Image (cartoon, rainbow, N blue to C red; front, top):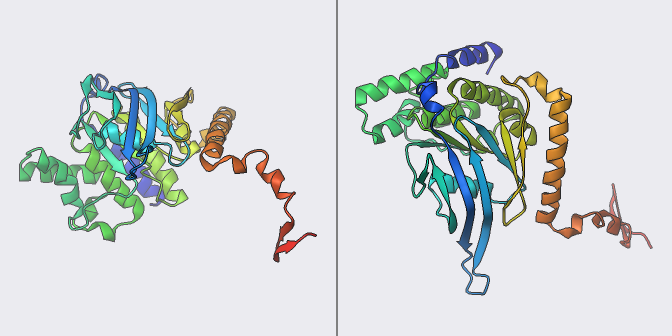
Length: 314
């Protein structure tokens, strides 16, 4: 996406209103209370279950952008899937606007890393899918879908199929499809993880501008520390499995966010603190062999590893 296209897209987002901001400000309140999720390991042993997350409590205020980061396998996506209604809690509860979540609902839009577009449907039909499920008439949903695609700079591709689009375009379609049904909450599971670094940065700017104008509540899962800081009002850090909340950091950077902020002292200080927290948990997740004494142990080996491969030091 070139600079002119990006500018047109960001400008168009200023006109994008899924609902009145006054209404949006009163909805989208997520409360996760003492959540525990266990999965059947498939083994007939005493450890027949695996605890993915345990005792997780967090909150997303109406109109707030919140990210969750943590080491691989810590249960970030599991928490999101419970909020989405895809996974059942073993204990504890999740509420959205005071209602206990028991199944998926139109009040929660979801965007995945894998794009999750239906490959046999055109771009416009993908966007219309949720509207059709809501019972909207054919003529109206075509109009709504084309309007949103136009605002996203994708109207020229309405009759293309997903495999004819770039990764960034697919993800824009996915975001539009999630927003077109007017959810109170947008749940995003590493949506930019599969994109190249340049497209990823542009998509972060697009998303933060979209959120700035709509103020929809967003829960964002990511491995990328800088991404979490740039996008969020608040960041939760999870421990190694079983995932628990290790820390909650408020991001004091002003809005709107700009790329120049990523080199500020405030940004870098937050990044350093998050890196420290994540490293502690990543070491736990990978095992004690890479702890502080792990590398020292290499010096005691009788083998030496060099450019020409391993050889005996004795």
